[in-house]
Amino acid sequence: ATKAAVPVAFNGVLSSNTDKDFFGFTAKKGESYEVHVWARRLRSELDPVLSIHNSNGGVIAANDDTGGPDSYLRFNVPADGEYFVSLKDHLGRGGLGFHYRIEVAPLNQVALLGV
Image 1 (cartoon, rainbow, N blue to C red):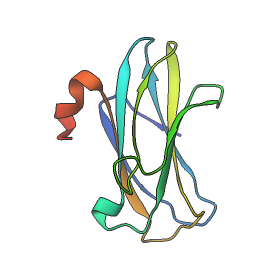
Image 2: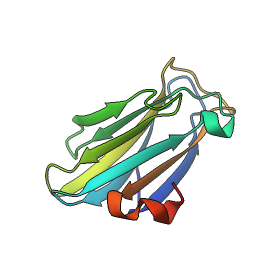
Image 3: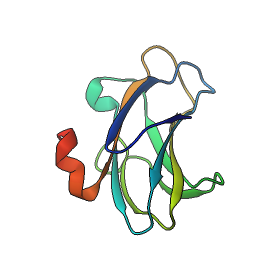
Image 4: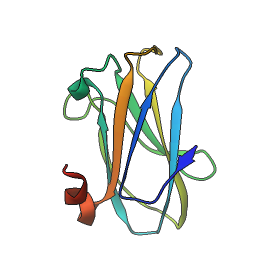
């Protein structure tokens, strides 16, 4: 997984039917984050399914289609550590037209990304 400090924007392409992308960041207990996926709004073919994983791989939050065809969620960090955002296509598709942008920001810094 590609790792970065938040706030951050990750860009990518799900290039095959089996593709699932992961991005990591460090967070502290009690922090709250917003995660936005930009796909359909960018005219992508992707029907995004977004998940947040803890360092053991367990899913602690997930979303498909909140607020429209692009995924969005807010989550509270349960413990200090590494967290990962994963993205896949709802129908398991991929290809050059399956591009996306994922924006991750603490709730108090959402305006920095222009969200």
